[in-house]
Image (cartoon, rainbow, N blue to C red; front, side):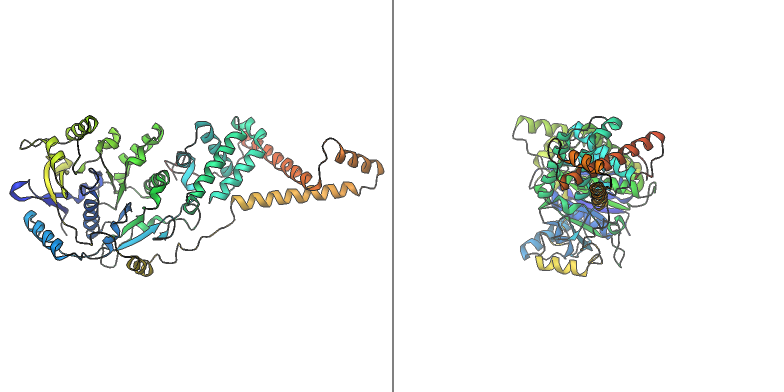
Amino acid sequence: MPEELFIGGGGADYGDAQHLQLRYANRHGLIAGATGTGKTVTLQILAESFSNQGVPVILADVKGDLSGLAKAGSTSAELHEAFVKRAQKIGFTAFDYHDVPVTFWDLFGQQGHPVRTTIAEMGPLLLGRLLELSDAQEGILNIAFRLADEQGLPLLDLKDLQALLVWVGENRDALSLRYGNVSTASIGAIQRRLLVLENQGGADMFGEPALDLRDLMRRDDTGRGMVNILAADKLMAAPKLYATFLLWLLSELFETLPEVGDPDKPELVFFFDEAHLLFEDAPKALVDKVEQVARLIRSKGVGVYFVTQSPDDIPEDILGQLGNRIQHALRAFTARDRKKLKLAAETYRENPRFSTEDAIRDVGVGEAVTSLLEKKAVPGIVERTLIRPPSSQLGPITPAERAEVLRQSPMSGKYDAPVDRNSAYEILMARASTAATEAADAEDQAEHAPDPMVREFNAARRYSGSRVGRSSARRIGGADTIASAMSEAVIKELKGTTGRRIVRGILGGLFKGR
């Protein structure tokens, strides 16, 4: 097999043929350009090429066009003629039509196999960003996660977290002594944000069976890498959910995969489309963690390729790590656009034959300005490049064809039915029920006490102040019992006798190794 991927060329009017070296493909990359300039097709031909070399791929299908990877290209006679003509012009002698192995995934379980994670795996840092919490609210979320670890309360889905927050609110006095102020207003704000997330369909993202990352790194019987396509057209209606899920997936890969050094080809390639959503309004702490992951994950054999409109969308520290770049046209209609264009041009190794700035502005649809890593990982001189035509279908497949791919998928049935096992919600409900039963039994015993003075005292207590009925007394008794248990837990924590804590990854909030 060749050790490089053919990207494009151009014959006499352009530069030499451009190849992406497989051994440097894990040095990350950038696909940039204005809307309608050909970024999606470039992503498609890269996914095809990596798959053909046995490299699994993860990508999000933002517009629904990339499902065509599952079907060999079948075009009109006019388009076929254009494809063949371009292939001949750029020297792409291996051009033919073929599909690649595809697995469809969907957070909502409608256009692909359901994909889930647990609340515990998401962690408070990413969850706080997803919910757009303030510092005080995020602090309470961290307290809740800490208590879940100490009390052995698995956080699997949204109702687990909602129940735990109720428990935190009921015991805020005892908790405030140990962890700082816990306000009901902040808890209420978090609960409202969770309700909004639930209304957006976010509840489908959390639960079990959780995604097994090994299912994203499969190859077919012929050795071609699986192209995992996440349906994201509906998901884009909740951009924070989209960005947070992909960021979680990236962090899980970082935490799970072993070190492989500098492999001959990547173990996996991850395309992050609409990358500006990842960094938009992101706190510095989160951007720093993303930069850390991007810097270190290449040693795990993972190449990360950001797809966005302008290089300016990517923080400078991260942009500097993107060695392989395919820059489609940037339009310069305003002063701000011209500034972005100039900054983009300055990030490339100059070619004395032409102005990089002019080239980025002038390239047409299906053309790009490219700079790919060469020998010893040195950035190549920028070249104007005609991108090769795709071998798979240009545009989406039909719903019936998608359904057939799903039916034949090895993942069929594995994730379809959600599993609701015993977790924080069930444990807390059981504790509350036990406490209520114990309170009711104590009250019944007091009512039937043999001593008349004891009966009179209990009767007076029941009717003193505001009258409290049996159901309210049970609730109060349950709360007192839980508060007592919480106080005991705090004492145990101070003595250093807490139980095993669940550790999370680099973006999980408790920055420990697994």
